[in-house]
Amino acid sequence: MTKNILIVEDDAIIASGLFYALDQEGYTVVHSKNVSEAVNAVSISTFDLVILDMQLPDGTGFDVREKLKNTETAIIFLTVVDDEGNIVRAFEDGADDYITKPFRLRELLARVKRTLNARSGDSRMSVLTLGGVTIDAAAGKAYIGESLLELTALEYRLLLTFAANKGQMLTRLQILESIWDSAGNFVEDNTLTVYIKRLREKLGDCVNIETVRGLGYRVD
Image 1 (cartoon, rainbow, N blue to C red):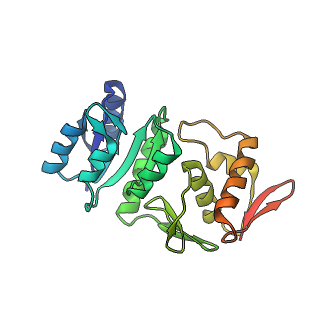
Image 2 (image 1 turned 90 degrees about the vertical axis):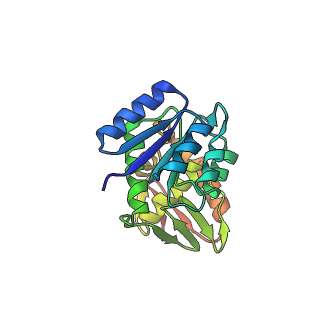
């Protein structure tokens, strides 16, 4: 069955590029330039996924998200806003993914496919556990008990990488290649050390990220 996707984007060049790429992938695509058009679109049609700009001429992406609460519509925020607070708020508000501009089109298409598959039950790793942490991969959220872990997008991808490779030793290069940032830039080796440290601090005693000297890391 063809999936219906709504693009909410005021930049005509970005919107046209996305529209063409998604149409070529076989999706049925609708474009709205602002909050008003988007609210009207979701009131008369049902969408499987909305790709939602954060900053719009007449409001924010959260205004559109509010209209989609209590629906099965998946949300991917696509925005220049890379502030940690906004990222955390987006995931807490139910976003499935968060991509910052500029972005690589092939990566976005892959994330669209992954999100739709997860929502349709095709994901093989929708819920993962790692130590005392539960990861809802379909929702893009991680919990310690009932408490939501406040992670940056890169920290979340790092945690997901460890969970998907539990018990395996991962080299620093393997980890770096798996957590390249949303703009398509590879994370520097020194930066990885910083993010491992931050993730350890947030996980506390729930997860043990073991350093394998000279090689990489392992989480059992």
